[in-house]
Image 1 (cartoon, rainbow, N blue to C red):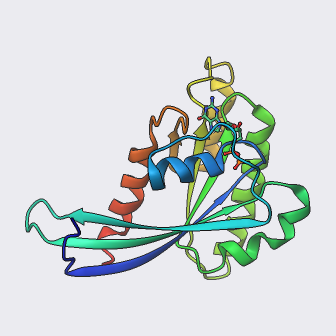
Image 2 (image 1 turned 90 degrees about the horizontal axis):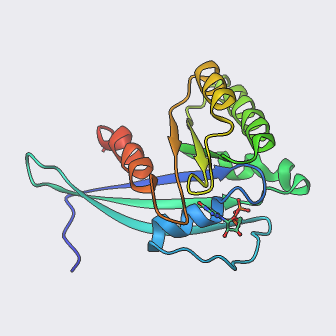
Length: 181
Ligand code: GDP
């Protein structure tokens, strides 16, 4: 069943972060509500499109959001290509692994790069995601909350494996653009 949408918007999202933090798994979880433990690593970048319908609870008006989600490879050698993917993006999801504190350092690097880009009159919304909450024993919590406070970016915890937190993340994105369409 495909509802008829009265409004439509395109939304480009880019995922950035160290290799193996779970970027591709998050995209798969959001796009098809599945998890594939044996998936091959992303080379360069890959993108998926997903149609997402939201109904306004007050007016019952249906809006269609065409998500275009770019999943970039975390490897160092592709780093210089990143601007190609975040250029024209509305939202950047910076992902780290809750059980690997070095991936948080990498996340900080990406946030700094995007903030510098935003200072040149761009307006990418930056979100920070700590993934693999199913494996985390809260061992890095102090350092994570100190970093999140300092960076002042919206922060979400997810498990692409179990699906926890993924809906909340995308709902936040949908809500934040809702007024724009
Ligand atoms: P990417 O390189 O950042 O795109 O990371 P992948 O999505 O390829 O995931 C890297 C590895 O971590 C794979 O073996 C995934 O199965 C695993 N993985 C990803 N997300 C999760 C998660 O939320 N929990 C657990 N336990 N493993 C995950």
